[in-house]
Length: 78
Ligand SMILES: [Zn+2]
View 1 (spheres, rainbow, N blue to C red):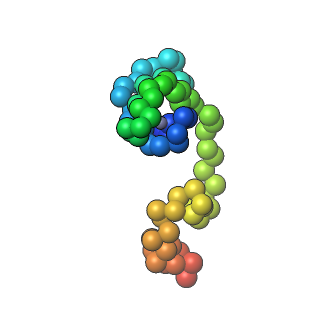
View 2: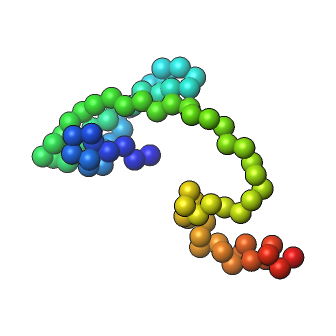
């Protein structure tokens, strides 16, 4: 998971985390930019369930599946 520093927008390290509730987790983050080095707390929380549609992958959401296009063509010719 990538959390960016709110001060300098550099990648951070999640030092530790703890559950606040079943749907929310508190992350303790440290900026990896040596010229910034801010430490801060962030929250991640459940948003909503995704309904299965049976449609082809959305490559904007899952670009890593684009390289498997050859396998998807099998279904197009069936
Ligand atoms: Zn920073």
